[in-house]
Image (tube, rainbow, N blue to C red; front, side, top):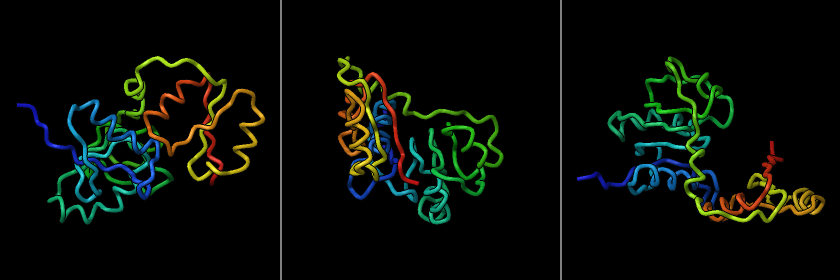
Length: 188
């Protein structure tokens, strides 16, 4: 009989608000594994996938020793959001890391595998969509209300703003409806 128990997945949750990349994590894990997913705190999760969340896992690693009886968190395609002090590969079970910058911060990570599971997004939004816009502009969620974003979209013919706060699957289809897409992090 196949295991149907939920996978305890850690992914960033923005105070109940949708955040496109983070909210795709459970959808991709469910799609790939065929198992349900439930959110779990870093001290109690089994898996961390997608997103810039490694610094949060590192922050809770000592507490985890007491709450998870030393079980390692499996990491699949996650990375750091900013430079970080080096961590030991032995603290986690790495299936893949986001890229070389993350791998460089992990001591003794032999033959790292690079890859962001976000590459599987096309499988979540498989139905064809007609191209409706020349440009899709995806601002960081902090910048959604920035007047510069609105001015940019108004200055570019046939452009639209794509919000990372909308339903992730609907956001995928809106992205697919654009000929070209650019993501603009105005914040520092």
